[in-house]
Image (cartoon, rainbow, N blue to C red; front, side):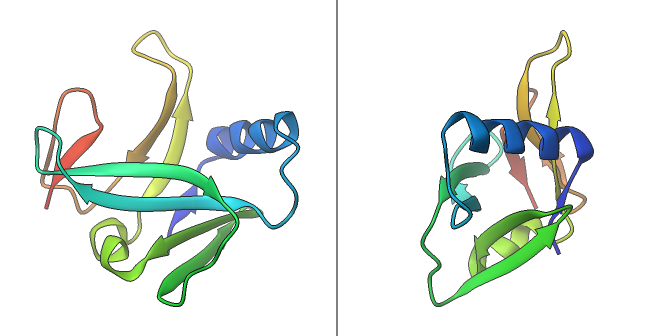
Amino acid sequence: MLFVSDTAKERIQQIITDNSYDENYFIRVSVLGGGCSGLTYQMDFDNKIKEEDQIFNDKGIKLVTDLRSFLYICNTTLDFSEGLNGKGFHFVNPNAQRTCSCGDSFAI
């Protein structure tokens, strides 16, 4: 399962409204090689489901990931913050053994 925090849900809904995305759009989350810790997150809006996609719905937000990425982000929460340490989306991943200081990269 993938999860969405309340603050991330509010921001996603605002982005959907601001960009006039229709109900076919969802959040695609991927894990790619790279970053200072070895793996990095990628998040985009998409509207095309692929055959191997894993589909989750939390708080009315549809999250989609490929099977390989899901192995790294199972039980991860997508969060959003507007604090002094930066503004934006970030992932709370219980599987990560270490992360870089910016939070964009992780290792299992």
